Length: 241
Image 1 (cartoon, rainbow, N blue to C red):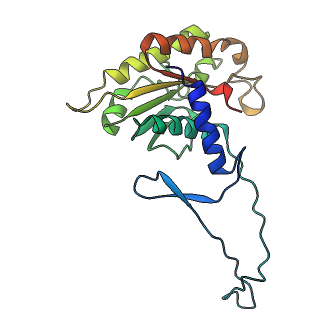
Image 2 (cartoon, rainbow, N blue to C red):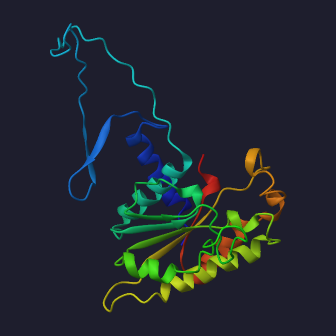
């Protein structure tokens, strides 16, 4: 299932709520399910002791416009889309450092340098296939697992191309489906997210990712094929601006 158009609608809706493109609001999620919002009034205390306020004389404070990362827009848009479809309750994001700090989901398991199925010769524990079944078991029941991996497959320590990296993601899909969850628990839906294209590396990471912008060519297309073959959902993060 391709959710590019569906996800775009969700992203646009969340933009308006978060104060990004299309709207500017001051809100907070409330309630047990955190599925609604309410406006929060802001009062500025004035006076010598700053213990009282005069509503008529308070100067209006212009709040800076929120800066929303592409990661937050992407995941909130995806979640809005799936919530609108009525089949998402618990979500796990399994990814690398591109997805750190996405607090809009229930569970987040994101590790710096994580590959799909390969180890880092300098940092142990970066093979995404190792322990994934137990991560699914521990966090179940889950409605949706979001996989956003592949960028680190193209570090200079690996001579991989897009097809091979996508096959790594295909293995992760199989591991999720075969995880030893308790009887009666549902096998979660899976969403494969193609990470943004690698640009020419700059700064401290330029040596580690030397040539990666050429090796990752066509990754989104290969992941889309895998998603179709495995009958899972697909989204291309490159389409989020």
